[in-house]
Length: 331
Image (cartoon, rainbow, N blue to C red; front, side, top):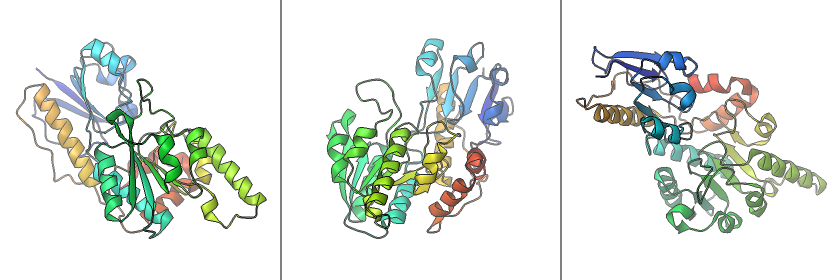
């Protein structure tokens, strides 16, 4: 019998949906501690909560749902050894991320139609991004070696005006994605390439990116081409290594910067909450519960230029990364 559920209070639509006999506790990520989850049977979390032995050892937790696509914050080996079942929400916010990528491309590249867009990772998001790009008349090239699709990134990079990353973050296996976009790839990019990371922090080697951007600026100065934007890489970064602490030197140099909200939309959050709730009910053999659709978060700014405004906000006060993220009104 399930007695207690702990839920990250940043996950909407779950208030008032559980039977009264279940003790439901909504906590901030900082409050989800070993002591707080000791008596919990199930956890609903986001990426800010690391699911590992340190958190769960000695607890009653048997089920974990992360309301996110990514799951690198979950220690899969520990969960398997401890008999803890976990689920993520693949595809829940795919359309929101696709919209973010489209906004980034049109903000940097204006209304240019003769673009070649390289989509790295052909999962839920990658498919939508490829479809969006084709509808806009762009040439689309794909790279997803694990699926045997398209070109290698080394082959793709020199051909593209845009490289947009949509992979999970993995460090092991035949095709690790940690620092997938490294110095070697960056050197292969042609002048003016727009690089977008709306996947996971760590997919791009930020130190290599900073070095490349700095080198290009110095080179532009030496040849008096500072006004020639095509001589430099362009960048749109939503996911950062070491969040919420950012590489502030890199932040100063990127064109577009946001606080890991590419996937933040009302529909995406609704999908994630629904997927988590259904998996919870199935695991504990409960009647399927419905999310509370009346508890709709405030809708944020979706007008043209919203990404530029977010960039200005983050660059002005990078120490508020986490607070901006918490207060962000869903698109």
